Length: 432
Length: 143
Image (tube, chains in turn yellow, green):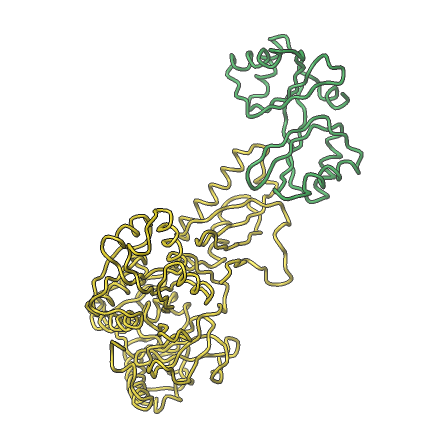
């Protein structure tokens, strides 16, 4: 199978006609159903029927993560709750997660997008899709799961963790396509090695990897140690979850499924759309979603669009692998972490100096988040056990808030770099 | 009877102990006794010096994190069983020892044991009742 859905290879004219029709329908519907969007569209001078061409898109208002938070939890939903069949959520900056809702139709559309991604990775009905993304509010696990079922493949809902068991199931059940974060794929490879599992004992042929930033070098490594083809998948819960875009066999950019999302690249400072080929902030408009459809959602991810035709035959534009963020968000094992969240927790611990730094490193293929905190005269003690109590307290509080394990390191005063103006709160040492 | 101990937080990176000691040296502060407790990431340097006020000032000026703690210093005979014997009265009166460190006096006839305990007054009473010389602050500083 070359592709799952014929729309993937439609001529651009036909695809763009569909996009316009769907954009018009979406803008008009949001105006009618969601007071927030009505206000924003009115401020931008739009009323139903005003979107005449795809060029009008850049005149429409942006939506941001803050907008989702301000309308927490369901304020931006465009359908009554009785039509919502699924909720997902991701971590937010102030303790309020970003909540997204899906109708039955949305779940079908999403499954179709993920099925396309699995086909890109060589999947068919004959495959066993080993889903080692977390199942839960996070979109990774259930997203891949429904895509595998939609394709008619065999979904293996492993979820994350218990790596030895992952390897055992991989051998016993003959998993052929692995879905997880790239760092976890390397971790699985190592555990295979430790357990003495030979390459011949597993049937793995490809992997669909995402939910954290990675590089082509890391892909080479994964492909080498597991002897598979590794594909980058991109998505974010606000837009749909995994399945917004996927790398084809060419591995030169990720095809954005443009029948469902219109991608734009903007200058994050001015908000202006940038010419093709320039790097900037990636923005998506949902044109095929009922429950929660966002106009020009600012992802804060940095990428660029590739509009040249792709030898794989897909006509949908490609986006370059994500190269960074416009904010200070760190993605650690699929969890979004903002320094401001850590700061809020630290400030609630009496006596702590307001100087801290987050250092992320990848050690043995696992992302380690170290929280460095300066010891103050108030928190310092001549007794090691009291200092260890302090470390433990900080660790427990930060972990329970972020939902990701951290290491705490006490530092001498003034040892954390002070910068002019904006402090450098996060240092990412991962070589990606 | 209580002696002032200065504790310094040291990150586990090369040169930090040297810098701390240099700061004291430049201020003509003489170290009478010291111990270092360490973890993987940092250490705590504990010092008894001849001039605690100057030492505190110098360490703060040099941006070290310091704290002052009261400890007791006891003279014990410098021979086998010396330390074991001095621990007995503390055990009998249920005084918990957080940590201790020892050094030998110049005369070589006795050793000094520095105790960090929570119940300072009870410890002093117990040790004195056991016939031990709990040293006066000024005597410790001039040894």
